Image (cartoon, rainbow, N blue to C red; front, side, top):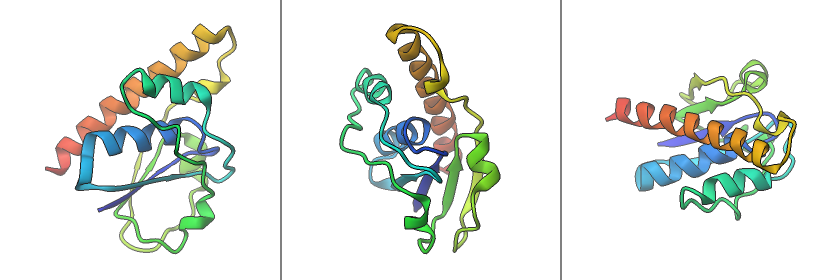
Length: 136
């Protein structure tokens, strides 16, 4: 099965989702991530994931246009903007939406920002674990 994790900038939530899903599902799924306005993987996302032993430092922020001809079994939107603006993708592509706030929007020092990324990571992991369990 092919899964696309999608958020606006493809810098944090969808990147952490991609890394977590690869880690949790192993070879069961082919996992990708993208965004409508891609930027770069946020260093705080990399740090939060490294705390879990998951390395996303080699992941790249991709534009959704790259995948408009790819058939996915599932599209996981992890921010409201992506859910609202996600175009129709070819194939069966069942959509699942989880609304997570942007951890990069948090004001404060590095520890406060990292805490926000940890919270999103943990929330994503809980949703992904439950979803994977429902697939089996």
